[in-house]
Image (cartoon, rainbow, N blue to C red; front, side, top):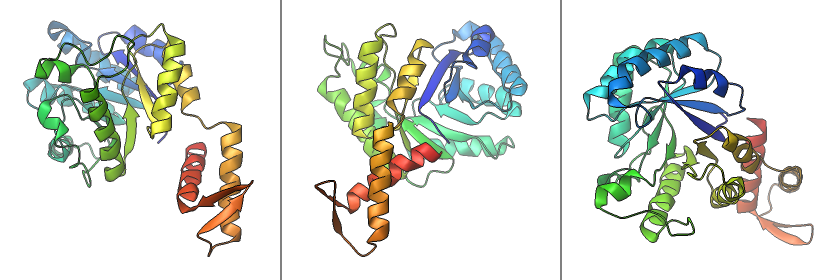
Length: 280
């Protein structure tokens, strides 16, 4: 499943959902949590359920409310008949949270929805980032830089120039490693300055450099930039093909020379990863 870009759309705005379908995002996240005021949630659930039913071929995920409130089960009761492709779980605190969500999905007859856990929104969640391995239905981990500062009493998660402060760089890094350990997709968090497309391009490029495979978007204008950042270039593809071909021609080699540089097995793994993105 290709997840370069995942665009948030408020669950109480069916007009925006329709427009978002044609914007090129690999997936839409129909939001029933933060984007919807409490009084509007019942109406939003109906709107999301109707949209899911009307667009069975689209890659549609739903961010539900956290497990520890009544809103979560109300969300699931309302939307699962529409067979969403995935559920985005906020305030996840480890593999046990995903297991509980999976139980609730199965209990309601849903056997197919995948899960993306937002894995850094509470202090306890940070200590659960190594526990996601083997979690049923888990397809991706992402992180957030907004709820955690509020939870611990921090003034902000960012420096004046937009960079994350050290505690939130730690949270980001642990999410990346936690996803790799669980063998699921690591998805970068949002870039709030939605008019700053140049800054977004640099942010997304850094994310891909570090190992993230996709990113969430909060505005339609961000989708094209994010897709470009997480799509291998022609030069990258050609080099990856050369690396794979070199090892295929020398299956017993541990290290080889290619274009004047030494390559070894980690280069092969990276090349295979690049080509898998192209082929997905």
